[in-house]
Length: 154
Image (cartoon, rainbow, N blue to C red; front, side, top):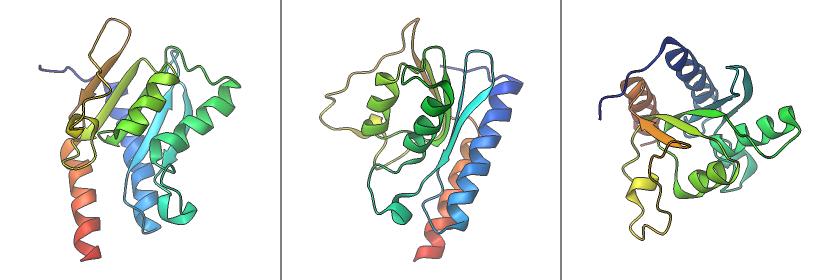
């Protein structure tokens, strides 16, 4: 499948990369996320804070979801899109679906914890008219940030 990215897609993925760099600077795995509403307005941003919070659910997506639901004063994020620098894990994908996000755009594919690596396949997700997942936007930049981070850790 060949995805046609828009300038708006590129802009918001760049914003997600800025969030990932914030995580990097805090010695967190550099993952960032940005949620936009149906009008194209940013309503939530987040970056990985697992180490700081000492909590396994402090993923970038969850941080962005918290901010977006507070901004909208509603847990339902109908019509919203999330841009994430790394393929979401099954936990985050489920939270995004429960929040009714309609589009997920991510950068790098996760070889370990991405939802496509889920061996049990208990969460079947397929693109439909009301929901889509697209990967590969700014893939190289997302991968480079992650690789640099893990190289420093070793």
